[in-house]
Image (cartoon, rainbow, N blue to C red; front, top):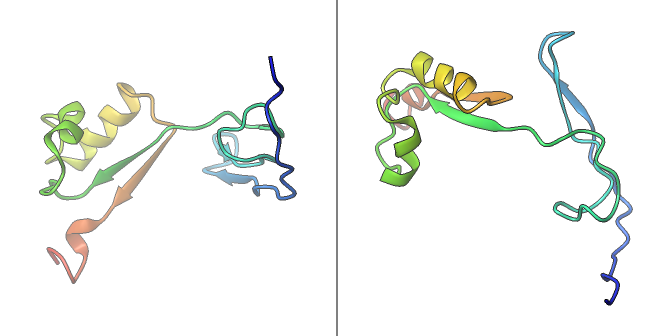
Length: 104
């Protein structure tokens, strides 16, 4: 079998710690291209980050809403489902309802 071609990556993704000391989540630190698991180092396992809105999403496809059925009108319940059921490492709360160019 032929060996995979390799492209030397000279950069490094900066490692970032998010959260309170002792409970922080560490992301980054890679020294190779994304999805090139055969090159470089990946000192931190990938994390699952999910987005929660403060208003019910109006333009999302039914397929995107289906996993969160019944909680999209309540940001607290939505966040709880992301953490408890889907085991999210990080949750991004998007304040779409407070945008002056949107729902305001």
